[in-house]
Length: 132
Image 1 (spheres, rainbow, N blue to C red):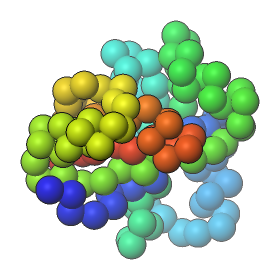
Image 2: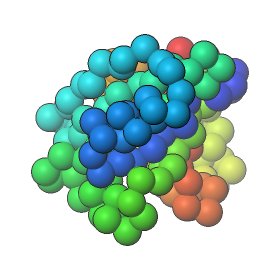
Image 3: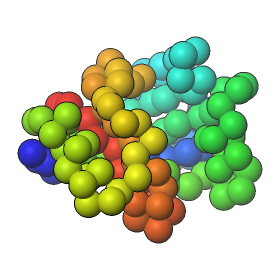
Image 4: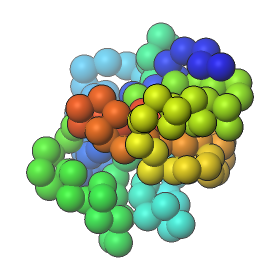
């Protein structure tokens, strides 16, 4: 069952520059920057208290994210919903004709099981389901 929104995912061209710019606007603890060679991306999760922003930078070979960053510059890519039964919720989205990039949950860059829809889910914005 969907429990609420966990974070908003933002594709960025330069993760360190984007974090620096945000830090000039709002104060937040410096996030860890995590690289995943398997997923071909670098990520940082900024916790703003009542909202988390996940900055995602494509590495060489990740054409999906790199192409989106080239087209749109820094842009919202997805919003993540927390699920206490991710397998059931993935099947529920598919039953509602929401096309999934991940047919089954996989382990994501933060070490949690997650599954991503295609951007067509919300007219260009993907939905990510994640375990808490």
